[in-house]
Length: 518
Image 1 (cartoon, rainbow, N blue to C red):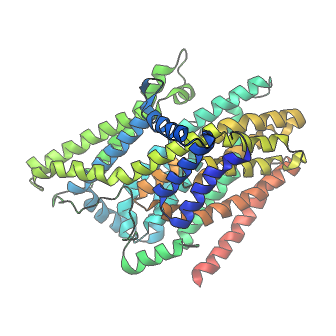
Image 2: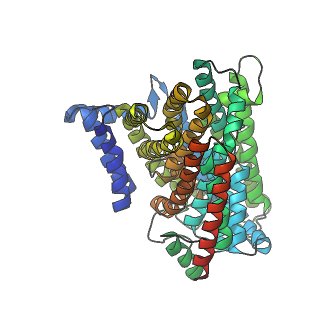
Image 3: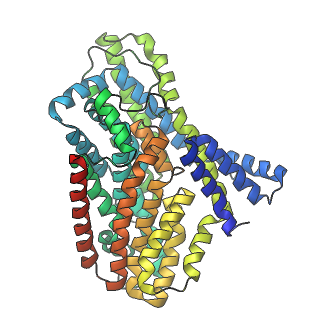
């Protein structure tokens, strides 16, 4: 059943059910069951054992604690608690009042969120959650829907991380490229210089970022996004009151009357400083020899760094709560336990979805769905000029089906290197750039992607609302990027496809303006 067309069934079933039913956990559960049955070759008892083992592996792997998963879950609970106490201390209210005096329009609020998403590029998990915390008071005040905020977060986190060498993504990709260059005895450039040369070829990143700002300035609402935005503008309800939203506090908490902007800024600043500092520390501890910045980020422990940074941010948050409760007397101290409970409860929906997504991704990996899709590319006899666009599409399908862009990088980048090195060395970098772009595209669209889940969580948006509303924008970016990769393959010129992409973006902007005025 592994590495065959049957391996496509579980992700397809899960994704179709999610889209049709909007019930994420049920759909992922059906996908998990179907994957386990295929792995067990229809032996029900063995299928149950496979599921139990996959769930156990989330927490215990090879007899040891699976620190990556456990730390990510703990970080989510810590972030929920920080959010609750920022609200209790009056930081969210004060920041919202401060921001509304300076951010005068809905477009301005969206641009602020987009710029923050581009600035905080160290890691996509951290980006999605931190930008959401900072932006929500601003976008809520300007009646920007949470679905739009989730789109802005998701479309500026992974796209920026994938072209930033000083990020967890960049370090991982450069390490893979280094192995590919060594395998094919390439000495013309280093792995780092290859990564830098590939940045302008990552067309999906540039089209996605351009469309984010076009959408923000021109209020372009496509598909279901229009419904969410119209409701937010007309009623002030930034999310659907009938749907569950991860990261959103379930109950109104008491708020200090003496809260200040610093009660929000200082915890977030502590979170950023603590996380980045921890990434530098864990990375430097793991490096042998010369500890360069690139080597540090290549070896950093992202999950542990998020946990340490979260604990530091929580400590600062609780100090500010202590000040509000015992010194300023702005809120009663007995709300402490309620803040802890409500903060953790706010993150439970995200944790449930994430756990289910991790299980199905593990089982899909055992079915070798990614390898099957990659094999299709490797065996196909095509005009080599079509290689970049085909790799872009296959990487998109792979990341969409498996819910992981990193897994797609690991499988497809070496294959892209093998094909290009064999038939046309000039297409080596374009082919690998197409893989990076396609994997980010597929990850953007996938409801089982952890970064998609965390973007929903950071924005406080219903998960499926985010997936459905982001899809039209991602598909437009992918369509424009595909034209670029066709031109790149046939011309082996970076300039020509970039010019074509600029013209297509101008055409989209003109079309968008026409839509917005109707």
